[in-house]
Amino acid sequence: MDRRTLLATSAAMLVLALQPHRAHAALPKESATRWKVRASEGFDAIAFLGPLSGVDLYRKYYAADADAFAPQLPEAIRRDIPALWQAANAEGFGLLGPNLQVLFSSGGNHASLDALLAALRAKETRILPGYRASPYWSEADWAWFSKAAPRLEAIFGAMRAAGFAAFRAARTPGLDARVAEVQRALDAFDVISWQTKLTGRTFDPVIDVVLLQFAKPHGIKVQGQTFLQASDYDTATTVRIAAHEMLHPPYDEKGPAAQAALGVLRRDPLIAAIVRDHDPQWGYTTLEGMLNEDLVEALDQLISEALGVARNPADRWRKADDGMHVIAGGLYGLLREDRWIDRGGSIEDWLLKAATTGRLDPTNFHAVAARVLERPVTRLWPLA
Figure 1 (spheres, rainbow, N blue to C red):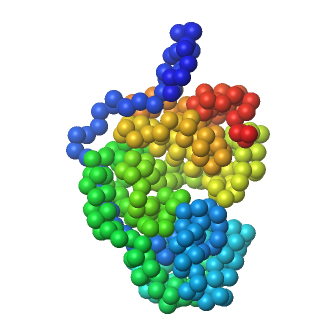
Figure 2 (cartoon, rainbow, N blue to C red; figure 1 turned 60 degrees about the vertical axis):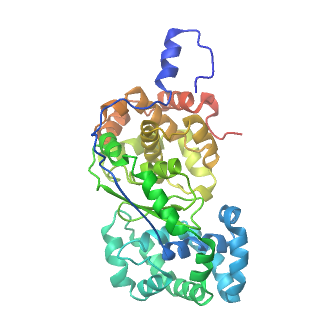
Figure 3 (cartoon, rainbow, N blue to C red; figure 1 turned 90 degrees about the vertical axis):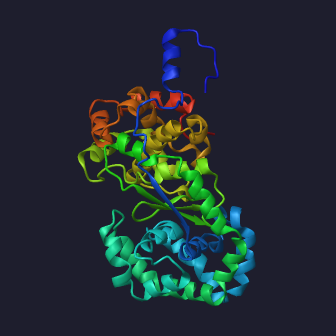
């Protein structure tokens, strides 16, 4: 990241303070992280709805797979998958695939297509209890899902009749070997210790990684400490996803820290424009969702640097989602200023103090974000 000759000592110190580095803070020698790696037919069936929907975001990776499988489905089902996907977005449920993954992610409901169908037929007892008890509970989302359940049952039933299990198996040769390979590689990375230190929270030691054939481009956090990812991601990518996904949500979403930060950011014209005008295919269409995501991204960047798997922050946030994660860049810069990787502590306390002492005010926050993102302070977003 050191790309320029520095002419002043103060400027040099500022740039050095923002450079990615391996943390030197001591952590326990024995890893606090226990990795569990597996696969799931049911989660893959849900993920495959993305390619079958015809959305470019998924066809970029799986067009050939969708084109090979779709003709095996009844015409009415082929038409209803994109219609249901569009309805989920238009009616507030959000991205159909990722949100369904969350609902089906407890009680073994995702093990197979048969399990998905059994759960749908008894959703009030098989799906609702786990979902209602989770941090993801939304009465509005449950109402939408309940209304859509007959259509989903028809879709998954048609996929089963069309031989999705065999179709998937033919495209995942060596998956068991890949699961074992990923398990061995991940055992060297202690993500939980860093997450505990940088948030002040307690985490279960087990991180459950589910390798899917049709997950791209998402890394999806579901109920518990479980996340879903593509089976061919390299180890560094898997560690980065785990460092990120386990942190959601990073605070009590109704607590004083979140509310104070949201109150400041709502008054920022740039942040309001990003929330309002960014491409909705990237999600985060509310300030609440964007702050949640971007604080997690700032923290996972620190953790990835500590573990030696980080991307350059300016490059990362320039390439992601049309450069919209300005909040992430600003929060990361403030955390670096505070040497949070060394200090650690309650991230909620830190956020509350940042919000109430003027550090999130546009004059300061934009300048910090500009240094991290390597953009002019007057052109933080859009990039073009």
